Amino acid sequence: MSQPSAQPDRGSWATRIGFILAAVGSAVGLGNMWRFSYIASEGGGAAFVVLYLVIVATVGIPILTSEFVIGRLSQESPVLSLQRLAGPAWRPLAWLFVVCGVGILTYYAVIAGWTLRYAVDGLRGAIRGDTAAYFGSVSEGGDAVAAQLVVMALTIWIVARGVKGGLERANLVMMPALFVILIGLALWAATLPNGGPGYAYYLRPEIGELFSGRVLAMAAGQAFFSLSLGMGTMMTYASYLRSQTNLGREAATVALTDTAVAFTAGLVVFPVIFNFGLSDRIAESTVGALFISLPAGFEQMGTAGNVVAFAFFTMLAFAALTSAISLLEVPVAALVDGWKMSRPRASVISGIVTALIGLRAAFDVDIVGASDQIVGNFLLITGGFFICLLAGYRLRAQADAELAKGLPNPAARRAWLVFVRFIAPALLLVVMYSALGPTWRALLVLLGFGG
Ligand code: PHE
Image 1 (cartoon, protein in one colour):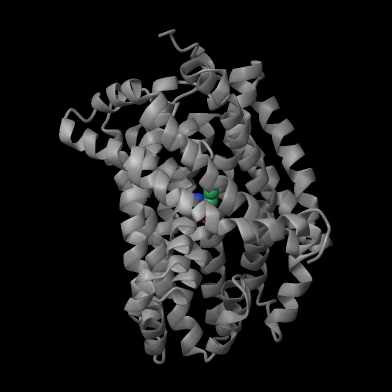
Image 2 (cartoon, protein in one colour):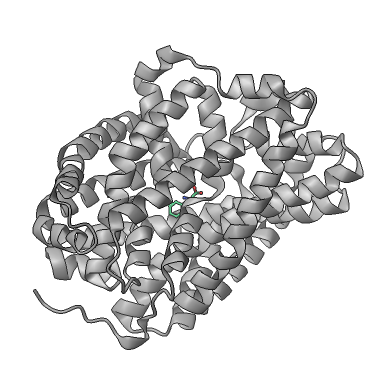
C-alpha cells in the first residue's frame, strides 16, 4: 500500500476529548433541536424513540465507525484518499461528499442565521405579538441574507484558523456551554405548572407505529442527518487523528451523546408548548414549533422570558455553528490536500461560493425545504450506502486492520462487518427507494417548476 501523502502542516487534534467534542459538535445541530422532536411526535412518540435507538445502533454506529476508520487510515481528504485506496471508480463518491457539504451548508447557514437573529431579538424583547408574522419577516429576504452572511463569516473564520486553533477550540468552548444551557432549560421546563401534557404527547407509546415503513424511513433519514453521516464529514475529521484509540467506542460515544441531546431537547420543547397553550400549532410546519410557538411562549413570561429566549436561541446557534464548520471542512480539506491551497484561502473561497449559492435559500424559504429533502435526506443516504460498500467490501481487509489497532476483540469487529456488509446497506436501499418520490418533487421545486 502506498504511504499517505500527509503534509506536516495538515493539522491534527491536540487531544482525544477535542476530537470527540468536535465530532459531537458536528452531530449535534439543528437536526437534534427541531427535527428530532418534531418527527418523534409525528411518528408515534416513544415508539419512534425506540425505533430510532435501534437504527442508531444497527446503522448509525457501524457507518460512523466506518467513516472514522477510513478517515484515520487515509490521513487525508477523501477527494484524494478514495482514489488512492480504492481506485478511480470511487472518486465520484468523494465528489458527492463535497457536493453534500456545500449543498447542506447553503441552507443550513440560513437557518443558523435565524437562530442568531432570534437570540439577539429575544434578549431585546423584540419578538412580540404575532410571532408567525415576525418569523415571516426575518426568515426571507434582506434580513435573512444579512444573518446568513454573518454565519458564513463566522464559519469561515473558525475553519481558517485550523484544526487545533479553529475547529477544536471552537468546540471546546461552545459544546460544554450548549450542554449546560440544555440541562438548565430542561430543568426549568420541568417546573412549568402545565407542562405535563407536553411530556405525555411527546412520549405517548403508539406501539403500532413501530412496524410502519413510513416511520422506519423517517427514523433512518433522521439518524443519518443527525449523526452527520454519508458525506465524509466524519471521515475528514478522523483524518486528523494521530492516536490509535478504539474507533468503535468513539463512534458509540458520539452517537449516544447526539441521541441524548436530541431526546433532551424534546423535554424542553414540548412542555413549553403545552404549558403556554400553543399545541394547536405544532403540526403547522417543522420549523413552526421552534421559531413560532416557543417564542410566543417565552413572550408570555415577560422579562424573564427574554432571558430564556436568549439562552434557548444561543444554544441553537452554538449547535448550528459547530455543525456548519464541519460542513465547510469537507470542501476545505479537499482544496488543502488536493490542490495544496493554504487553509485560510481554501476557507474563504469555499465559504464565499457556498454563501452565494445559499442566497437563493435566504430569499425563498421553499428552497430550504427542497434542498433539505434532496441533499439532507436523499444524497446522504446514497453516500452512506456507498460507504458501506467501501468499508465492508472494497477496503474490508485494510479497514479491519485499522479498526483492530484500538479494538483487538475479533468478535466485535466481526459484528461490525456484518452490519456494514449486510444489514445497513439493505436498510438504506429501502430508505432510498421510499425517498424517491419526495426527492423528485423537491427537485422540481429547486429547478423552479411547481412549488
Ligand atoms: N448533524 C447536523 C445536525 O444534526 C447536520 C449535519 C449533517 C452536519 C451532515 C454535518 C454533516 O444538525
